[in-house]
Length: 372
Image (cartoon, rainbow, N blue to C red; front, side):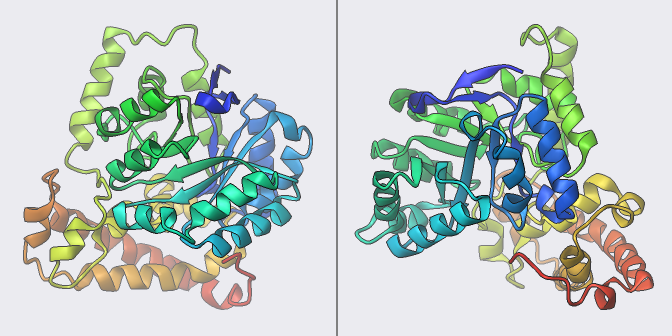
């Protein structure tokens, strides 16, 4: 496994890391087993926290805390709220410090809230003085210029942002700013929420000026595929690999939502959170990636099974509320056939709901404790 210097932090991070969004849906024992395998393969960047992912990770990082680079996040924009969240993360991970603490920053309003007097940046600076965190970070998946302006303040050490064979705006909007300030760059959504094959997407990404990538995984198979994709002697792509990258870029260009801070929702007659429906729902992404038959046999946590019917019933209600006014497609800067994509989801939602009801998951797992 290759290691790269994470900008001015001087931390050495494995090129491949682990994102916690999907692993958090699993039973705790299964999540720990996957984290342990990642650790044994030499991965040392772990991004969280989501659900019970910190509980899963805790026994793994205790084996060699100094080797591990652990990052957590909050959306809280207040000084006190950020400090409270840091203390919660320290307790859940049972560690004395967090290597990186990110502030979720999807747009300029969120950025301004973090940096204003009494905002969360003040909390992070205090926590750093107290030794509770080592480095300050920003995390965003929408307007990357908000992250860039945060970096320009000189206070930010690391950013985590989306970059993949389809979504490349970071190469112009954010990466040059990070390079000027020697800021660490961590990539989220490197396989475009499972739409792009890792064998194609990850070697392409390794050739970009980034330091580590943190794909979300929920199976040992995902982890092994990602590892094999980056276990190579040369990063230079062959002509055949370059052609594969271009094939998948074209194939996904008009299928992949870029999470544009809800531009489409702002014009939707029904006020549907279209980006969430199409791309940003971990329950649906697991269905899309695994398929119905495999999802039903998956070691999902009890609280996930208990919420599945409600979550997909709500999604189906939203899908059916679409009036097909067409305004979302007019607003989409990427020309996505949004209404068609949403229509195509209805049948798979109905099939999942029927299967979940047959198994009685809602009743059987109604009392399962939730980490949220």
